[in-house]
Length: 387
Image (tube, rainbow, N blue to C red; front, side, top):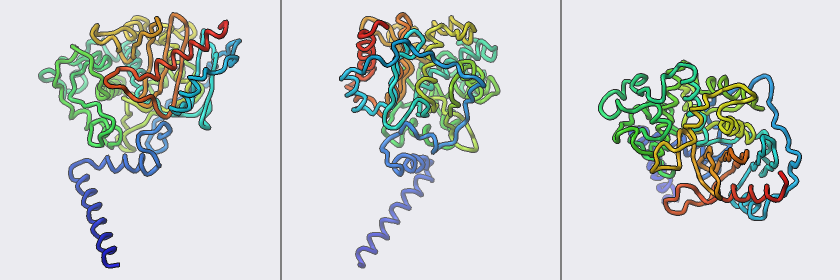
């Protein structure tokens, strides 16, 4: 009994010391992450985490622009390979839209067509689209406007060369390490810290901006902060008025914030919505920024966004991933756990997949294998039909 009491005493002392040190050295966000992730039975970020954070509402409009139902709706069953992948990787929504009509949809694991789940980095495509809208609205001069115009922290040295277009095309040169497993990484801090602006504005520019592609969530976060300063609006409100309402979204969406006091949107991630509302943004870009005859986004900006900025990095444009596969050219929104809106404009096909996880990464591959599978099996299903 004496040994047990001593063991418990020293255990509490060690735990208390660790907690105290985390606060002293400004790593207390780790405690928040542990509480949200591990204390809820998870081991990493999860798709329906929005109730554990502060959120801004991305309001829908008074009317819904309902997706038409294709004449061959759900007449083809998923391939055996797709069904296995959906089971293995925890798919919760798989939707194929052909010729702007819902051709196939299926939902799993007690989720349905209205269920909100986290977009993760698909949000980056929305933020880039808001940049195009801010240019169109006159809040921002062009892709070449310096970030220094909005944040004096970036007016010296290499930082003075950094433009809003560099942020959108992932060529900021920021000293950011894109690491998803270390609790001490700046990426983890951004996800769980209570003062996201402080985290971002402490980032230095260490490489010359605008010269090469490097995927950094901090670039999009800084772009989101620029947009809020330029427009005088929260990202949620600007997204609502610019796209969510005009696109006739069926449900309000949510955008995670750092905390209840600072209320800064996590621009690099974390819009919670459903598969068919996410698909609307893919359709908008497929149609060069036009929706129901109205030009919501400049067509030249859209065209530029879905082409590589850097020839040596053909996988990325401005806020959108690019992939050539099965002899076709796709552009896509892409999230951490396998959230995808995949668009093939020539075939007028949009594929949406949401789920709990993606296939494991093999080495330094740019795209995980699940992306190819979701494309291939969608086309296998389409080829079984007359469309």
